[in-house]
Amino acid sequence: MADKADVTTYTVKQALAAKVEDHIEIAVETEDGTTLKLKATADQLDALVGDLETILDADDAEGEAA
Image (cartoon, rainbow, N blue to C red; front, side, top):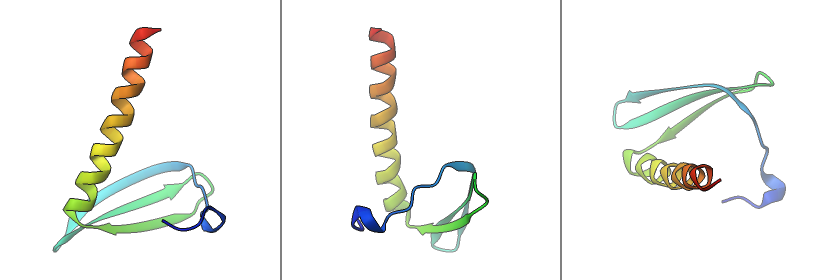
């Protein structure tokens, strides 16, 4: 991934996904009005979904322990 100095952080307002030919496109609108289009393979998104599930499961476990 890029050096942290090269990364801009955006807050997502809305996101949509669609399958286009051999890849998946994710359109993102940010709270400041910036729009982004991301192209990814199914394998890349599977890895991302796995990461997100791990994070959310940990958050759920912390919430139940409190």
